[in-house]
Image (tube, rainbow, N blue to C red):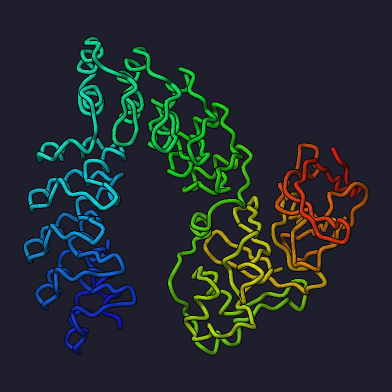
Length: 564
């Protein structure tokens, strides 16, 4: 059914044609969305599409999707005031509430929290009759959520609309910090009837609220009045982390000057640098790195600073500080490579059947010009999703080739191309589990090639390192399949970045052993330095995995390993 696609694209003629053919104006897609809901969420379709659908009888109050959203709420969350106004005039209920108590006014606080359209949208919804004092089953209200995000302009708009201020749990001093002037804060501090240890709904003290505002003058007054520089809010974030995540460089610099701990962590072991990287606050990331923040920290979920980076600018700064580019998130990786994720494959059933299985190359290298493989790279879907599209999910004995992998290396070449090597899809117990030995070369224009290799020339590898030097990528270590691991040895391969031929490199002396998940880099003298990771050993006939606590160097000219 194409009516939903046309609604999303804003194609008025195509919609008229669909309706003329008898397609229901309220037809549901696979998500349970109506064409009106699709148009309401679209950044391409304007209000003329909504008007056409409404005039054709679309139900403006139809609940859609698993979360039972409504077109007006969807339009509001997309930031379109014109669509909201049009839907309201057509009879859309601005006070719809989900079973969990969520309303449009609460939802926009999450969707538009970092958007300049938030306050105008609040004012419009209030004018249309939205309830300001609603609360979800989890205790969230428009006021509490907007205050949590530090959108005190939204808080002010809600209070002007006579919202009940009690959800904020603010003292007079807190309100002056968030909404008042420096003089008002100073006056309240002089009255001596304040307490600097009182906390609001989100367990923020006056000191932390001052840092959220980004007003250094207010923060300085509170600190001089005796506030605790190390104070933390509900999630464990101190002032530096809160400020870095919000992207206030001036406040961040001031906090560093007054002695804030640059490596302090929140309740999930995130540092200020990690939170700034996740929020894409490039200037804050730069400042923290210049101030000496460590770029290789991990939180309690094993997310690294690099894996949390959300923009290329942040990624480049972290790479410059020594972080491993191969750790970037799948989303950022696809952005860098010019790949846009889609939900289905543009291949035929015949192309699926002929190309869906993994296979090794027959030459060194073989260009794997397989339509299904190329489409899997472009789409970014899982092997299961591909099987599902072609009714092959009952096939439990054969893996389906997949580009989505763990333990794949990601190396940038001097000319701007990126090279991905090997990696695994799913875990060993999954029918689509496979460790690959292919090489993908991504050009700067979004094009790519896939190279295959004979298994004997280049065995399947994952969690290896891949380091570039003088026209070659050196692939070291890797976990590989259970049963194929050669304890005490360290596999090394050299990939020619012109011919894409790969060859094994012999080495001697004090090898790391069967090492994986390690870091590799070339030092100034051209030695390959290996550190961290794990080593797979055989102990009394049993396989064991131990942390690598040593640093190893490899001299490529002599091919001799040395333990530092």
